[in-house]
Image (cartoon, rainbow, N blue to C red):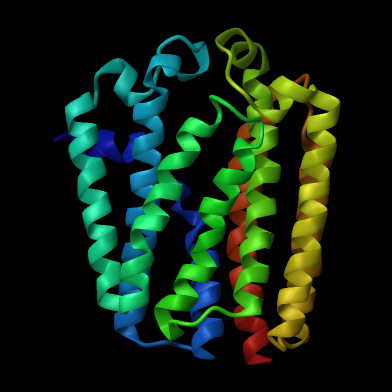
Length: 281
């Protein structure tokens, strides 16, 4: 099994989107450092879950990726990773996720099939609904809730505020990312907000998603009692989200990687830094 190709297939570096928010839920639930074992298990569970979902996505999209000029260099299309290897990797990631959940507590173990089901569902929603972006958002939005459960085995309002903040954040930038494939999606009968509703409507929805993200992050910080250090970072993150929309041009997709990966990677890390700073000060 060609490990580097597998890691490229699942874009392992994109774990930066989910891990910071998982760590936010972890430290808020614990009121600080939760200990080495919960930290390691939560990290393993998050990486395994994201790897599973991404591998399923690549397998489900293989027929479309082979026809889309933008995705014809992907590892499953080129044969750098075989379909059999991808399925073995997918099963292995699911097993690692379940074992990590079992190591945390019984509730996490019982809910692990639900998380896996939601992680796999996203890849098929674009076949029947333009709301697929929100399913993807909810999948990553589970990160802070799951980490919170991993520490306390309890649902809280703060955790759910983080869930919705992440859901809207991811949905907002995934809508922007989908603008690259409007014509292809329409030709293939696939659904996305840009393809179904048009670019002006999609961009307006994306903007509203990120407004909701800023509001929900503010509410979560207030409910958690975070100090002024959090509010400085919250203002910075809100500014980054505004800048993302100022930078994005639907008629010039050369900046998509900057908008999609770089800025949003900064958002995740900044939110975690803000939580830690708000708890410390």
